[in-house]
Amino acid sequence: MTQKKPSYYLASWLRYTEPMTSYDIKIRRAVPSDAAGIREVQTLTWRATYPNVEYGITYADIVAATNWWDQPDAIQEFTDRIANEKHDSTTIRLVATIGYKVVGHCEARKQDGKHKLRALYVLPEYQGQGAGYALTAEALKWLGRDDDIVLNVVTYNTNAVSFYKRLGFKITSQLPESETRLSNGKLRPEYEMVLSAEKTQPKSFGY
Image (tube, rainbow, N blue to C red; front, side):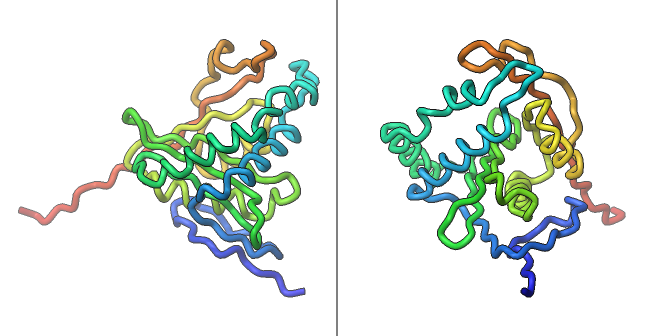
């Protein structure tokens, strides 16, 4: 079977070699009808990623933290939020799709003088196929490089930490414990990581 490359633009400064994949991955802006698909991606990714023996976080803890995400009221609220973002120049929400299926989701925001990569999730069975790189590339292209880009990542999510390091992000701090606990009080520690700005130097014309 002939492999296809994912169809997406990669900014050259990502210093990234495009992976080969048999999937035809498309990246586009989210629309309101994606709400349920995005919630499914978030829910399944949380449940596969965040249980942790060291911190005493069980699968049941993560289910309890996420079980409201697919409720009708929550889906409707999220649908409305995506619709409103169409007119919001400070936020971009992207999805990765294969056919009609949402397999990944990314959100980035420019707010209060900060550029932030707020969320990146890919369904576990599609991880390592290029969707995460594609989503991140598009989000970072939209954010630009004139300001630092900040993200938070759970410390024991070592695959994600390594992924961001390969893109040039560096760990700058660990967030206060008071900010990273689940609703049941269990600690889910997070790093702050930063991709430093690359200021464009003005051209000199020798005047």
